[in-house]
Length: 189
Image (tube, rainbow, N blue to C red; front, side):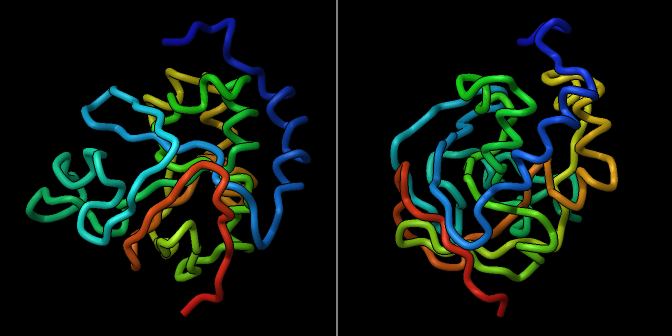
């Protein structure tokens, strides 16, 4: 999928953090929608539907299940993943590679813990998401795609605070989304 030559070194990754920190705080555009119909498969779409029962319609979240639930069913707290588009660009080196991160929605919005604590709601199109308390963490697949320095950075204290790996959310109001829609932060309930 990627080669070591495509992996960025820690110094280059750290130098890009200021650009990530400049992300809008309250509202920014939805820049990429990615369905994952099967493991390892990615389908980029211009519009989609977020559903309280299945997450992103056409994605495998509901059927894939979770090792973190007692019965192996899908974890509602991990229904939709969002990644900051500036962080995605930093990790991948180009927009054409964002989708391999494995997230469904890429947004130009400050998704840090300080700005979007658990319970914060996000209005996108006609749908509403709620930020999960469960963190989105890096794994061996992330390291394989972007390098050990990228995994070390997203796992560091600053990486966790900025949520460089992304955030988990659940759909609390079903609705339609499309590229370019404003992603607006609503108050936590």
